[in-house]
Length: 402
Image 1 (cartoon, rainbow, N blue to C red):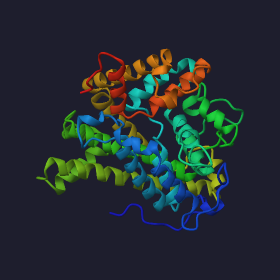
Image 2 (spheres, rainbow, N blue to C red; image 1 turned 45 degrees about the vertical axis):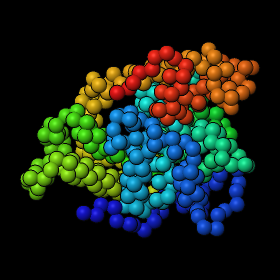
Image 3 (tube, rainbow, N blue to C red; image 1 turned 120 degrees about the vertical axis):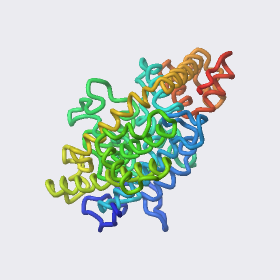
Image 4 (cartoon, rainbow, N blue to C red; image 1 turned 30 degrees about the vertical axis):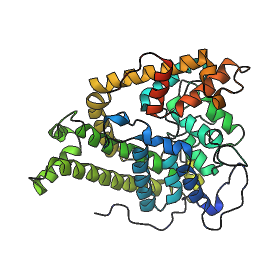
């Protein structure tokens, strides 16, 4: 069943012909619009290539068929394009945002992020979304005329606001940063290129964000079942999943397990996409936006799950949390992974001379905060296996992570 047939461009869709442009002006391409160029720059970046060897949930050498950050990113991009197509949004911008959304993840997934955030607690902390913004605005060194990728305002806005507004109109942290400090990289960059951190992002960024949730639900179920962390019949009591399983057993009573799992996850994705399109249509009808600015000013997400599907999404994550994310073997491996990242950070802070020459150059006269940020940048860029190689070079004992 088709769930995302193409629609005419919505009046509130981003239009590359009327982009707010790039921080550094460039000649337009005769063959590609600005959002397509953003996609291509992200795909050709060093940080994007490294995602191939960064953990999603299972460290990459546990098996060739488990998702990595790269395969997760590609699945998010496919779902984001499907949503954009079904809503009449700009597909290239939605894809660019999906491709960029995890560029800032350090090795070992959320375990690595926790370890770096703890290590950086006295120096502004570490946040993978903020790191993604640093990568595309500063750390990538591919172009002769500028640092970073010089992406359009709309792409940078969507990266910064992947989870919604960061501050309110008075500058007070809000959303996920309510009660804590907004990470410095957001504020530092916004001071030179205003990303309007108090508004919601455009519709394409919202589509990319909800695509991330959809991809997580589907592929984490698939990976957990592949790892035999639970049996498929345990899903019978989970909202929507039980319904889909009953339909599949009735339609294909003797289907082999691998096909059953694939049918389950693809139907889950289809139902979620259909739900987001229907709910977005309902919210659009209520606010009648005529420009992308109207979406930003709506005061809430416009591209989102219905309340029923949001409850299903919460139930799926609630089912997976004890059985996958906090499963004993996964927790043990991630604990060892955190130690690897923590050890590396502490060693480089004590001995910056042991950093590669291009990373250690000029650190001697820097403040502790500047030194810590440079070291965090270096570690965050590591793949899982390079982090283990570096740890083995510097320490007598390195965990196996198996």
